[in-house]
Length: 192
Length: 199
Image (cartoon, one colour):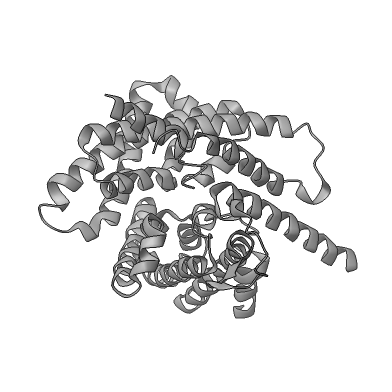
């Protein structure tokens, strides 16, 4: 139990997916302009990330490895994610129209979110068991949401601040991300 | 035409500095000049190959399924490069790790496929892939060199600073990637405004 808890904390805080593994930077920079969209994006990512990790884990274990065609992993995983996103989009549209209109354009964008493919690949690389994989994927998604929402809050604040001339626009956003990442480094050492 | 494509790819529409695409590998692998160069060249190879193939077969792909089709083509090239690097540059492959397979979801590659290769002739697409890739490599290389020189005091693993220099370790750590890229962007805005001011 303790081991699983540490795994969760490690995935969410210590090795935060955005701020220390550098996956999913595009949505991190792209949809962090307001906290509202940030929340929508984090929820969709959490959802897709957990499900796609489960499916790609099972396919890797019961199809790719027995047939020893592991080198096709990249192609298979990206196809799983792309079709899953499409499928999830259709299911949500039919069954939960309110959620669908809330998530809106974020769902299709997730296909090219490298965090989702990254976690599917990392699960295999770290040789996790099924339950570890589940905790790791969910923890990572939680970490993504945390970083994204925190960052959106920061960006809303910076909007009203005076920024030096040449730092206006993207430069200050990156500097801010650097400082946030510095803050997250404070968690280093909590979990090995 | 050719001149414009090259100029666009290398500078005026540079993938990182202008379009801010492909930021994940940019931040993650630029801890040293060598890694940056390796990543840049791997991406260039994938980009050139996928651009060429997509421009050859784009007209036979139905509009609705073009994105999955492009992704499969890109994934094939990524797998080839991945296996090749594993065989020939094992230590570099190990350092770049997960970011080699992640070239599949690099927005630059899919972006060029959709925006350029699907509408242009194979020759132009080839040139476009090469120049965008090299533009990307140059940007990575600049960032990687800065971070390596300041963070480790070396350049291509050769010591370049005075022996009394105390490496600023943060440059090679995760926060340093964001900070340095931020300063590089600021520097680019400064240079751009200078160029405009002179005209």
